[in-house]
Every structure is written in C-alpha cells, then in structure tokens.
Length: 517
Image (cartoon, rainbow, N blue to C red; front, side):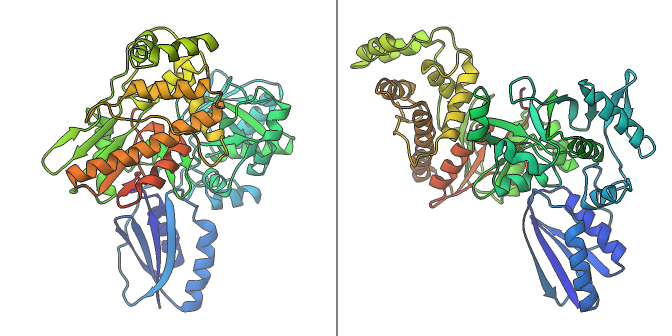
C-alpha cells in the first residue's frame, strides 16, 4: 500500500520537508518526498496497519507550521519523489523536545541544534548548551527573582526579560509563561492562539480585555504577544510559571517575525528568517528590496507573466498603485502630501464653504500646525487627520491611533468619507481631510470616524481598481505594504476586491522589506 501525505505549505523553505524526511527515514518504509509549487508530498510504501500507526505517530511529532494551510492523505498507485537531505538550521522547539523536557531529558532539535540563546552572565554572553543548561537556568531564575533584567541574544535579535507589572510603553512584547494565561489580559481567538503556538512562534497583536482595562485605565487596547521559541526560554517560562509568574516583559532591539491574523488567512511581517536562501540572497542583492519581494511574490502566486496591479501601502515608504504588463510598468495614482498643516487649511479655505468650515473647526478644536515631512502615503494622510482630530500630538502616533480606533470599533459600518480623484491620476487630499473635519464637528465618535476612514478607503481601492481594469485588462492584484498589518483594512480590502478579480497577499513573504524601527 502506498499512502500520500499532501501538505499545502505556503513557504518555499524546506522546514516541513526536513521533518517529513527525518521521520520517514526513521520509519524504515520505502519513501519519497516531492515538492511541487505550494505542495509538499510524502509517499510511503508499507503494510496498511503499520502505515496507520506511523500516521498517528507523526501527527504528534511534526510541528504545526504557520505556513501550512491544508493537508490530506490519499492512496497512490505509484511511489514518487526523492530521498535527499533538506535544510533546517533553526533551534525552534518541537513537540519531541517539549516531551523530552517534561520527562526530565534535555534534547536537541531533530536537526541536532540545541539552542541559539546566549545569556549575559559574568560580563559576557554565554552560549546555552546541554552541559551548562541547568546552571544557566538556575542563574536566570535567581536573578529574575532579585528583580534584575535578563539580557540574552539569539538569531532574532537582542532581548531583555523584565518583571511584568502592567502593560505600558516601557517594553515591546509580552510573553506568557503558558499560553493558557492569555485570558487574564487578552481576548484571543483560536487562529491567534494557533499562530502563537506554531513552530515559527510569531509575534501576534492581541486586544486587551475590557476587564483588564477597567482595572488598568491607562493600559493600551492592543499589545504584541509572543510565545517562547527556544528550549531555554521555554524552560525559563516553565520554571517561572511554577513560581507563580504568568507573564514576563520583553525589550527587543528590532522588529520580529509577526503574523497578522485575518478572517481567512495569515499575512506576515519581518519573515526573513523563514525565507529560503535563494530568496534571501536575491532580496539582499537587490537595490530595491521591496521590488524584489514583489517579483518573488508574483511568481509564488502564479501571476508572474500576467498583467497585474501592485497595491503597495506602507507606513514607512511612498505608496504605489502600479500596473505591470509584459513590456511595461507605470504608476496610476499620484499622491502628493502637502508640506504643512497651514497649507492644508489654506487649500480647504479656497474651496466653496471651506473658509467657514475651517473657522467653525478652529472655534471648537485646536488647529494642528507645523511642517509635514513624510512619505507620500495614505498612512501619512491618516496621520494628518489623526493629528487634526487630536488623537495624539505626535504625528505618527496620531495615525497609529486612528488605525487602533478602527480595530476597536465593533459596529457594522462607519460614515462614508470622501476618497475621490482630483484628476485621472491625482488623489483629492482636500476632500479627504475636509469630509473628516465635517463629521468631527458633527460630533461623530473617534472610533466610528476612524473606522469610517478605513472602510471608505477599502471601497475606494475596490472602485479605483474597477476603473483601472476597464482600461488595462488585468485579472490579478498583489497587495503589499506594512499598512496591511491593520487587519481591519486588510479584511475590508480583500472583501470588496475579491469580486471578479484575484486579489492576494503573498503567503510566505513579508508584506514589506527593510522595515524602519
């Protein structure tokens, strides 16, 4: 009998294939592994009873991968694939390591890598090994109990573990000592918990519960959460949980691999440590790393040789609405951010009724002022209106607050804001700002107004794409850029775009390369 285990694995790295090969080789069965596009297949030949026993065993031993979307098992007439070594150089914890740990045995990963953690001890960063594991763990526990921060570094970056009292801006990530502690602070759905528990251990942004915010009025409504990735940090959390510690705070020196949990899929930021070598090399060698990402994503999604629209919405760079054909590429939307708030209000005042609007607004709210030096992006526009509405005095934080307000809104719909074109390719910034000021004067709630901006933006993207399709006859839209980390915008955009067009995010690459912290 030949069984085929087929996995739809959305990343071109070899991590899944490595584990399939490892356990297939140990089984003693004749086997082969086949990789074809997004699919990885393990072919096994043996007696039915033994194959079923193997199926039960590997279901508990092979990690759950966040890049794995579907799997199935079926019978084949032919043994296909090949036997070769697949690359995996990560120290991420696996079910086997966790099982051994709880049985009192410290073991390496299946790839024979034990840990990549180096803990700061006696004025140096000392590598954690099986030989010094208990000594360094005891040292870490003792110093944590004393209230001292624990500094360590690994392949993801440099970190400091601190005692946690309450959520605030003094640290970057909250790590539960066990995932079952999450409800003490957060609302987390099943897909978020699956992501946190996955082999890759991404950061996931979770919403704080109403009860927690009642007891901690200054707590943020959203915060980044991450589970331990390495066996040493896992063991540290286990020991701390036994001591009654539910969470620890983490400071880190750069942004980490992050999953945004959408209604029907995950999308990723800072996923570079999970790229296969060829992708990493290609992107690193490219002058425009986001363009390199675009070409790789288009190839991954089967739209490489097709006419397509790139919608790149960034919190750090200029936005792009760009048509790609076989022989050409060109921008189809021009966004020019004004140089100051004074210029914006002057532009509004020149329109009919605009001077009265500005006068009424200034009578009720402080008028924002000062120069604007920012990328030409819709996020910059959200920062502008966020500051005009008084969401925050800091320009960028005002935009972030608008996005968070929208994610915090629980209603069915918001007001329709003006997202219009001033010309065939020029966006009308005046109407964008002016319509929001009118709703603000009318007393529309912060959350409703913020959600209205994102909902109206999603409708604008869909309507604009419909117009472009009539002129340029494309069937594919590739969605990219860090602004899509806002799940409200991502869900609304894909909801409205998926009628009559293939609108997709990359399944395995980052939304945006070369992120600025």
